[in-house]
Length: 162
Picture (tube, rainbow, N blue to C red):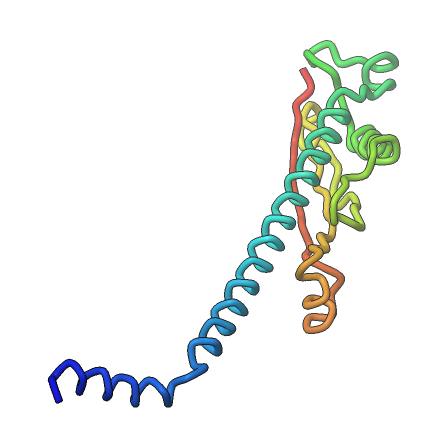
C-alpha cells in the first residue's frame, strides 16, 4: 500500500466520527449573528428616536424663544433690554402649546413629556424633554427581563431670542 492510500484511509476513518459537527457550529454562528443584528437594529432605533426627540426639543426651544412676554414688552418695558424678553411662564406656555400643536415624534417614541422649560437669563429658552423608546426587536426582551416599557431618553436644548 502506498503512502497516499494510507493517508486517505486514515483521514476517511477519522472524518467519519465528526459527521454533522459543522452543522452545529453553523447553527451557533447563525444564532450569534442574528442576536448581533437584533442588537444593532435596536440601538439604531433608539438613536433615531433620540434624534427625533432632540429635533422636537430644538423646535420647542426656538418657538419658546420667539414667544414674547406681553407684559414685559408692552406694559412695563425695560429700556436697557435689547431683544425680546421672555419669562419662565412664557417659555413653559410656549413649549406646552408647541407640543400640543406639533405632531408628536414618530417611530417607537412614546410618553413624551416636558421635564423642564425655563429661561435662565430672560433671553434664552431652555427646554428638556423626556420620552421612552420602545425598539421593536428588543421591546419584548425589555418587558420580560427589566420590567420597563422601553429605554428612557432625555434631551436638552436651548435657543436664544434676539
